[in-house]
Every structure is written in structure tokens, then in C-alpha cells.
Amino acid sequence: MPITLLIVQILNGLQLGVILFLIAAGLTLVFGVMNFVNLAHGVQYMLGAYLAVMFYGLTENFAAALVLALAMALLLGLALEFAVFRHLYDRDHLDQVIATLGVILFVNQGVKFLWGAAPLSLPIPDILSGSVVLMPGLLYPVWRLVVILAGLLVAALLFILVAYTRVGMLVRAGATNAPMVSALGVNIRRLFMIVFGFGTMLAGFAGVMVAPILSVEPGMGDSILILAFVVIVIGGIGSIRGAFLGALLIGLVDTLGRSFSVDLLRLVLDPSAARTVGPALASMLIYLLMALVLFIRPAGLFPAQGR
Amino acid sequence: MVALPAPAAQRSAPADVIAPALIFVALAAVPLVASVGAQTYVLDLVSRIMIFAIAAVALDVLIGYGGLISFGHAAFVGLGAYAVGILSAHGFGDALIALPVALAASALFALATGAVCLRTHGVYFIMITLAFSQMMFFTAASLAPYGGDDGLTVRARSTIAGFALMRDALSFYYIVFACLLATYLLCRALLGSRFGRVFCGGRENPIRMASIGYDVFRYQLVAYVIAGAIGGLSGFLLANAVEFVSPAYMSWQRSGELVIMVLLGGMGTLYGAVMGAAAFVLAEEWLSGLTEHWKMIFGPLLVLVVLFARGGLVGLAARLVRSKA
Image 1 (cartoon, rainbow over the protein chains, first blue to last red):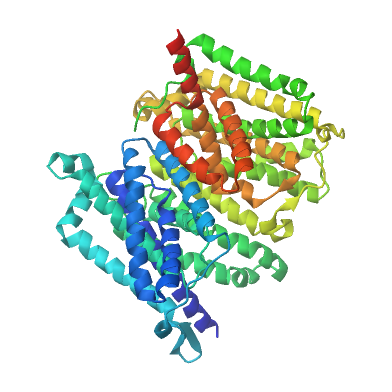
Image 2 (cartoon, chains in turn red, orange; image 1 turned 30 degrees about the vertical axis):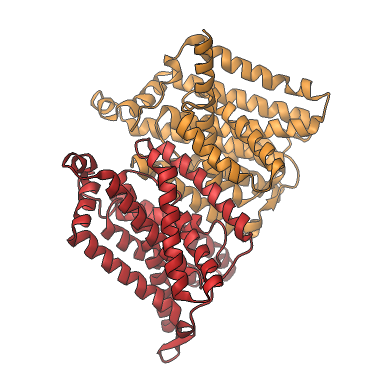
């Protein structure tokens, strides 16, 4: 039994990892290219989930809800960029943090205003519901596998996009030295908008994908945003590769830590002490990991070149 | 990076003495004025303002003078509060025990996390301080013996050497007032000292400071520990004010609120942080009375302040004075 439990938890960790990657990728690109700290990035994740629930209610069709929610999330993201964020690119990080915090307060409360404070949920599409037998004695929900696969697919697409296309080249160049890219005649504002819109879609997509398995509620983007911060700090800001490996690492460590900390501690402590210390230690684990990485490499595991 | 405002030491001397003096005289006079109306309500409200102001003044030392944008200051407040809550649950209800423990706990946490955080710069520093405070938040939430998510009730306000001085609203008010005044004077003296000059130099030009022989990291770490301990003091008072402790004290929104207070008042002035705390708490009190969805008003307001009101309330006042002169 323990080995199947281990496999299940590893899959769960991977699933959290790819979701974190979808969020962290946008965050790290936006920061890498525009030097812009966007605390409100988690809001896009929440909006993706809420919009999917709303459009599902209207269309009763998951695919349609997914497409409409992504389009709407992109529109809202670009509207925010136009109204607020683009005025902040030249400001210092403190101004960016506070203004985007204001945006979070507004959108979180706005969501509560429109849809209420109670958690909502999105049904899993019929063909992808239910569980599949991975090996004898190991049932795993199909939807979670779909989330993992979709996340890995998007990650692969992103790698190709960044490594082999012209826009990707500009993004990499922008992450290294944005003023120089601008001086070479590239419309940097347009590049910013493309990167921002893309990051918005990725976060929105993550929100739609988790909507069937997590509760959709106001503020759901905030805690995952902080995890995404931990991911990009570990991976190195501006680096897609770092974000990917960091996300998987954090997803696995967090999930496995939470599942097995009590059992592992029981080997050295008495059961009641293990039950008390275990959860506390598990929730600290990823931050301790982050501290360790930073202690060894202050700029993260894969710092983007030139910063 | 856009240049941060000049430290108070470089500003005009009268404004730098008169403004804080006016603020503290006004705070000292609040109970006299309030005695005509709803005294307990006013005293509680202004006590709360001053408790947040204590943490915000210390945070202003880091942000406004050291350029260290700490986004996890609520963790220190929470640690101080939990020291009171946990000790009180075990029957230690005296400030002579609770206060040193609160200060030591937050100072130690600042020392341990500061040693890691201060190795990084800029946005990394923001994210790491945020992450560490989130760590404390989740740790507190998983402390099942002390209420976990739900928090824990403090049995009674701390006694001071056996005397129940904090149980009376008026004397509690003046205790908080004294703590705020002491914090302000301490931070001011610290920044005016040779230590403070090196610390500010670390923001202006760390490479030059290093080349003339200062290990800026150490100065920043000491300042970080002091600011953390002051956060602990704020938490000690907060736990006594509301007689309740919860993980929410350490949430990243609380840290954000403290940074907002600093920015709202005008960073790099210390007394601006007091004004910022007042503005924030009063705005919250007023707007939440208007509508349950007050954050939909406050959020955009914050964006507008960042975009158009640089220098916060102090900057606004300075512009007014200048245009009259």
C-alpha cells in the first residue's frame, strides 16, 4: 500500500507543480522583461476559474467555457494593463507592489460582490470524469492526469516559443537588456503587451484547469501567488527553465511533505508530538528549501543572463 | 530605481521638529477631547492606530531609510502577539515576562530570516520577506494546541509587575502612547547616529560603502533585528488591546497594510508613518461603515495615491505649505 500512496502523492505533487509553473511562467517573464512586480498576477488565476464557472453556467459546455474564459481573462488582463500597470513600468518596485496590491483588493472584493463569498465549483467534463487504474490497487482521477498532461504540453510549447521563434528571441533579449532591445528599433511597449497578455492567459488557463478540483473562491489566487514567488525565487527570476524546475520541486516537496511528515517524524518522536510538529514542519518545508537555495545561490538556481 | 526621498536629516529643520511635535501633542490630548463623547470607542480606535504606527515607524526605518522593502513585517507583529497569547495560556500573564519574550522572539526571527533575506536585493528581497512571513502564518495556523486557524483568546490583559495597569482604557492608551513615543525617539536617534548614516549609505551606494570599509550587511542586519523587535512590541500591545491572537495577524495582507501605511504617510520621515497609520485605520473605519464592499473603493484609491500623490501625506502637506509661502 505505501508504494501506491507514494505514487499517488507524487502525481499530486506533479499536478501542483505544473499549475505553479503556469502561474510562475507569466510572473517571471513579466518581471524579467519589464522589471515589473505584479502582485495581481494571482488575480488572473482566480478570474480564469470564476469566468469558467460563469461561462459553463451559460453554455453547459466545458470546451466553450474554457475558450470564452481565456478570451475574457485576456481582455480583462489587457484592460488592467492599459488602465493601471503600464503607468507603473517606470516606477520603483515599492510603487508597483502597492498599486498592484490595490488591484488585488479591488478584484477580490469585486468577485465577492458579483458571485458571493461562498465557494463555487465547476463540474468535470463527462468523458474526463471518473478514475483510471494506473496499476493494481491504484486508482487515480482522470482529470488530474489531464491537468498534468496539459501543463506539460503548455510548458513544452512555451519552451519552443521562447527558444525558436522571433518573439521568443525578443523576449529573451528583453529579459537580458530591455533598453538595448528598444534601442535596436523593437517596439518595446508592444512586446510588453504581448508578454503580459501571454502571462495572463497562462494564469487564467491554470485557474480553469483547477476549477473542477479546487473550490473557486475569492482570494484563491493570493496563496498560490506567494508559492509562485517562492518558485521563481528558487528558479531565478526571468528564467523559464528555472520556473519549470522550481515549480516541480516546490510542488513535490510541498505535497510529499504534507503527506508524510507525520509518519516520518513518528520514527523519531512519540506519536502525539509527531502529530503536532508534523503539520507545522510540513508547512515550513518549502520556505526552508528556499532559504537553503538562496544561501547557496542568492540569484536562484538558473539566473537569467545579464542581471 | 527611482530615487527615494531624502532622509529627514537633510530636510528643513523646523518641519522636522514641529510636525512630529504637533502629532504627539495631538495624540496626548486625544483622551481630554474624547472625554466629552464616546470615550472608550475613541480611545480604542486611537490606541489601535498607535499600535500599528509603532510597527509602521520601524518599517519606515527599513523602507524609507534603508531601501529595504520588507513585505513581511506582520510576521514580527504576529510573533509578539503569539508570545502574549501562548504565555497567557500557560498562566504567565505579566508583562515583565511576556514583553521580553515577545521582543526576543521577534528579534530572533528577524536575525535568522534577515541573515538569509539580506543576502539578496531588490525584488528578491520583497519576495523572500513575504515568503518568510507566509511561513510563520502557516506555522501559526497549524499550531493546533494554540487554536490553529481559529486563533486563541488571551485570558486577560497582561499585568505589569502585578498591577492591572493595562486593563483600564485610559491608562492603556497612555502606555501605548509612551511606547510609540519611545519607538519614534529611538528610531530617530538611531538614524541620526553614525550607525544610521552607514545604514542609509547602504541604500545610496552599497559599493562605495563597501570600498570605504563598511560591511553594510551587518548594519542592515542590526537594523532589521531592531525593526523586528519593535514589530514584536507592536504585537505585544495588539494582543493586549484585542485580547485575541490569530494567524491572520501574520497574513501577507497585514504586511501589505503596514507598507501602505508607510507609503501613505510619506516614507523616510518616521512621523509620516504615524500619519499613514492614522489615515489607513480611519479610512478603513469610515469606508467599512459605508459599505461591506469597502475594499472596492479602497483598492482603486490606493492605485490613485501611488500614481498621483507621491510622497504621501507628508509630501502633500509640504506642497501645500510651499504654495502658501
